[in-house]
Length: 269
Picture 1 (spheres, rainbow, N blue to C red):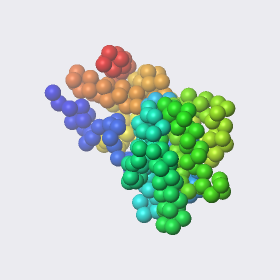
Picture 2: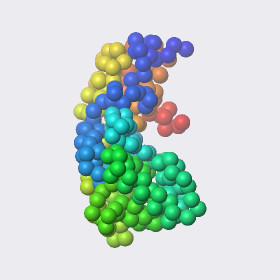
Picture 3: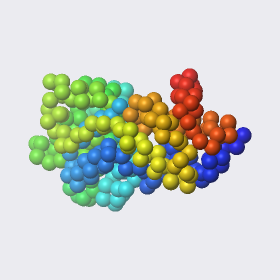
């Protein structure tokens, strides 16, 4: 069976999630998050970013981290959030290259000393991202407030990025998290793709792959957008499946019927 990339004259799958960040399509959400992350890079503090699944928040983070100067900024990413407080400290120690201890208080001090030394003595800015932060326990959120407290709360020695689903905003509004919420310097909640964004995105991706933008007819794109629920990940899945079905059936143009078949295939997968 001929691959759809060959059938449609593409030199790559333009909707693959493994595409390099340098080829990223600059959605409005990505641009908004990038601007705030750059602020955190230049002014240490806490950032809160939320989005529904598949809207591209982790990809936006990757685009940002890929362009950091490693001599000036150390970036650490942790995505396992369903852990105990002690396990969280062990994860962070391992990520930072610090010795793990069976005592939380010792790990806490080692972590703070590391951030303080990197910031004050080496002039290196550390940025720590906790992905899927909506799963963090109340105890970990409480400890994060203390972990960010340096020199009697007079200095920020690293940036903390909390990345999660929209429920994370509600969590931050709870009274026990008030002190942590007050420390948030920047925040952004994704809006998701509009239909015009989706059309521009599809045209840009097809051009990137060296393919004709007219493979998809106008009504087909409307069908695809209506089925993705503003999720870029879901749209990519639908587009890839539609191209696969189109190539299998020797269709030079992808219409609404093929998109509906692609949506049905994905929902049954």
